[in-house]
Image 1 (cartoon, rainbow, N blue to C red):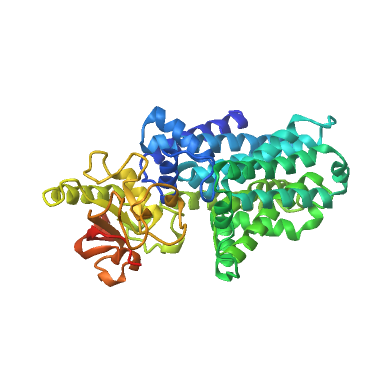
Image 2: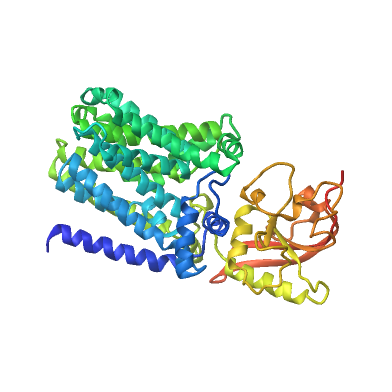
Length: 511
């Protein structure tokens, strides 16, 4: 069989498998938050733009508020990213490199996680590769105002709506590569590169300003500035784990063997542009204390360059064969574990929590059913229903998604979420953009539709004392007592536990 046709069939089978797998794994907290935002579209939210919520809104209109409705874009975006990587590798190198790059890309753990349960990461991979492809096309076109520059700038700008720091790091890395490589020094005297940079920065800032809370968004980008060495070290370990240890080691080897690629302008461009994003991601984690897998998009063009270096290296055929075997087997095996590590623990393996699938939450269907039963049982004492409060934005969004629509929850309007967060003095999350039980002034609840109503509070852990709950929640109600403990089990093994508390008669925080 033709090699290209065989690879195409394999990618098609993987894409279909990702759709089926996406309907069998519960939503992550980030996905649930994006689904919440898709119900309340805005120009910009607290830390990202409207692209992901808009895509989810389009799919849920057709497929409903289901797992497939939320995740149907993931396999498609990975498929498009694969096509872009193939075009890029074939243009920069040759057909053999393009084939190997596509195979390595499809087996990479981070790509398989993005293809199932992380639309933000899948969209970032597509936009990053679209930007690099547009840059490469623009560099080889004579026309000063070629469409490739506009397409690359728009791709980087859209990437900025997902994560402004990643977009800025991408533009910096691209600029450094063009400054370092003599072949493209003249580009700085042409309008193309300036179109790319201006569009890349203008698009996300335009969305932020249009939303009316741009300063709030910038605050979320720059919060917790300091030195966080543990986070930076964790970013490096995450890169090695989710890229595949053999591939990560291969990239380090290729960088040390600089003679192999110093005269190859295409290889150097991809290494500098992609490696710069990885390096700046570690720096961002060191300074901000926040970590995100979106930074790992920088590794994707490096893989194509790595394959080219490996194929041209002066190594024995036996050594190349061993590297090829491990380069495929190790990320492929990690991908099988990484898509849903909770299933590994249910088999009895002592899988460490810190190596869990990023942002994966399990057991929310069972949790929502238990809470619905408690709400129905409490209708005799609270005929208008209780309102719900959760301990974190992710928990609130997941409970909102899995709680049946007919559940008797007290809700003041369609714009108000059914599950709220504990009130606070400042802006803490995207929930502060929407009507909330905590929007009444301290010391009074006059005019608040929640005045005098009772609530259920969902806390992580089992049987925690009431005095360990947030002070703002305890002081805002007349009385609190213990309600129930919920255990989420799979194959008789516990995955997580929750505690429910009754909170009676909301009265607002004291002055």
